[in-house]
Length: 107
Image 1: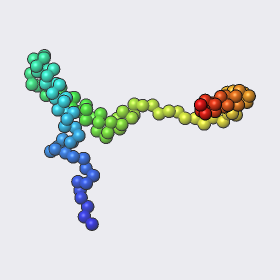
Image 2 (image 1 turned 135 degrees about the vertical axis):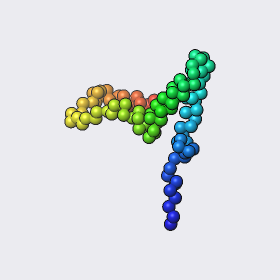
Image 3 (image 1 turned 180 degrees about the vertical axis):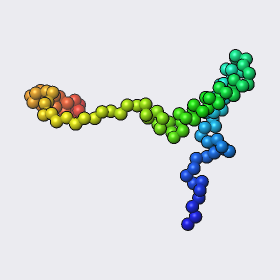
């Protein structure tokens, strides 16, 4: 049975990953409008700034958004406690609470 090389690969347009084209276009467009039209800077600044923005976006989203941002979230520290159970309500209060809950559900 033949095996296709491109079966599990992500789409590409020449050297650019396919899922990065629209974000890169937006980054370049924003840099162009802000730097060239508003501030009147040269094309060098537009290209350098947009290249920096595109590279930053690519690094942040390279292996999926969670691959980068998942490292910033602290994992919970789970501990196992061996403590005897102490009910919050005494047994009489707990029974009356159960009866009230049943009455509310029946209504």
